[in-house]
Image (cartoon, rainbow, N blue to C red; front, side):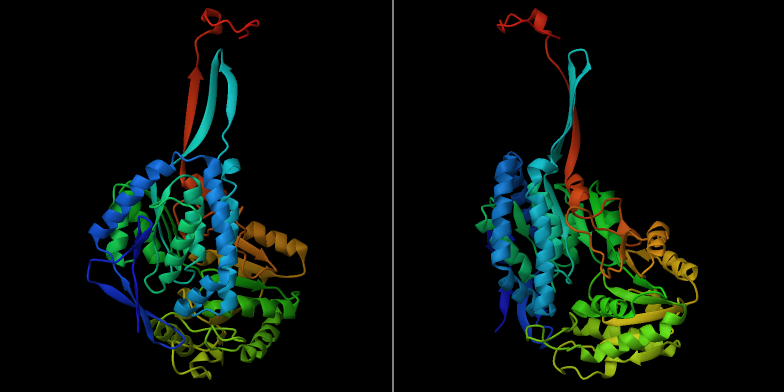
Length: 496
């Protein structure tokens, strides 16, 4: 029996009226577990109208009231983390520990946003001119929207909605139709935390719903995380319709491994970063750049670790890696291994022939050696459990390879040399850098985002840049009547 997954509008679930649905699978079994409603343009319009009404009242709420709701939401999210993680595992497939990890990173953003009274403090200049004061304030935009990917159905919405709501906006979420139930769980927690109805809305859908949000005149801003082609489309369409847009695209994250690196530390870190969540992470390491004579030892060390990873149902204890999100995506990832082999890469560990469960959308861990920059397995974002090793002779050659890549989301260097690490962070043209840290996702009080084709627009996600994105600055210049001409008796001498 399948579950119907409906929209969340005006503080309650509302069944779709389009007559169109999409199947939701358990990727570990391949079974259809739900049918999610797909909204029409008219349904999106009704949801935005509800959010607009709610935004007008929420915008007038005090900072302490907003902070109290965020603290209550944070408490509920912490208390119910296991329940939410189970939903994520059931629809995405990642192991329970990975699901808990994404919730923990989302919680950081809620905790940051709970400090909104401090975050929205302005500046004040007394006597900018005689009798004139000048001060700046930041005000909410109104209705803002988020379009989020399947790979982090809890964390990425929390990157967006916590700051947006804290700043006084109403937030409309369009989650991935592949794993939509986590969004509804968040909606229920927001309501329980005391958030007024309509301030958090969930509209399920496909391209029709996305396009409706992009052109709706009452949606002031839109945040997106996904592939580069879609990010570009979102950015160009949204900005053409007068919206603020932050659109984070794809990635091809490199790890530069120098000859002096601690090999065990580097291999452990690369395996974790490349194969965790089946490689379906925009911060996954997908290329190891081995410098000089470290290459053979690094490939051997990674290959030695891969058979120890248990691939299976993410809800089962002891599982290290779950399935991919759909059968079609699993087959696409495998096709990159086919192409890499045909183009001359060495298949060191072959996930296509791995002993994995036959039901569900599984692919084993794959390691490709002797990859070159001309191969499709290098050029494209694979988004699966495939790691390629590129061999270079020098640091300069490795750096040039990384800087020439169209994606510039995250990167890492493994070395014992502090001077080399500092030079790398200075030289590398990538937005997020790890030094002996394989997945350099910034903590919530910084901001997340890459460079080049990994980001469209100039605003990174969450943190201080997120606060600025969801507010507009206003400068007030104030002059009051000269106190000397006032008839009010102050009871003490007047000053100017």
